[in-house]
Image (tube, rainbow, N blue to C red; front, side, top):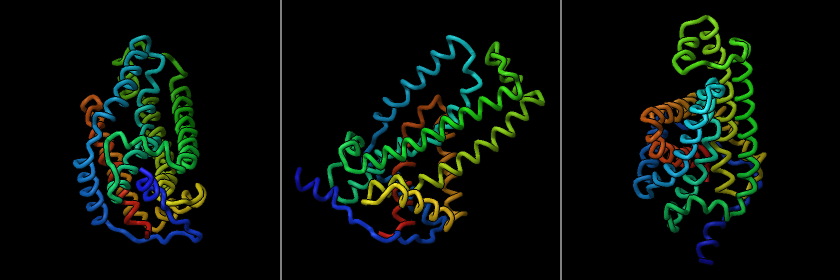
Length: 265
C-alpha cells in the first residue's frame, strides 16, 4: 500500500508552463479507442447507474407532483454537460492508475477523495457549479421573458407552446445560443484542467490557463471533441438515460487520453 501511494502521488512539480501540442482528428480517434479499451478493462456502468437513476427518479417524482419545474427540465438536462467534468474525475483517476499499473477496481473511482488533488478538484468543481446555476438562472429568465413565468398545464401543452409559437421559437433560438456560450466557456476551462490537477502538482490557476491555451492552440480539434462529447451524451440520454452508464465513462476515459495527447508529459 505504501508503495502504491508513493507511485500514485509521485507527481513532478512543474515550475514552468506545460508544453501544448497540436493535435488532429486522428488523435481524437485514438483517444476514443483508448477510452473504450479502458472501459472494457475497468467497467464502471453499475457505478454510473447508481448515480444516474436516483437523480432521474427524483426529477420524475417532482414532475408528477406539479409542472412548475417543467420549463427547467431541458436546461437541467442540457446543463448536465456543464458539470460532466466533475463526474468524469473518477474516470480520469482509473485511466491514470491503469497507466501506472496500479489497482483499477471500479471503486477506485473514489480514490480521488484520498489524494492531495482533492482541494484543487473541489475548487474547479465549485467553479463549474456556479456556472451551472448561472445557466439555470438565465434559462428561467428567458422563459419568464417569453412566457411570463406561466406554469404549464401539461407536458403536451408545454411542448405545443414551445414548438408552435413565436415565443417558443424565440426561447429555443436564444436559449440555444446562450447554452452554446456556457458550454464553450466550461469546455475551455475544464477539458484539460481537471485531469491536469489530478496528474500534476500544479495550481488551479495554471491548470485553467493551460486548458484555455490548449483549446486556443487547437480550436478545430478541440471544438470537434466538444461536439463528440455533446453528441455522445445526447445519444446516451435517449433510451431513458440508460446509455449514459456506458457513454459517460467512455468519454471520461477518452478525455484523459486527449489530455495526454495535447499536454506533453
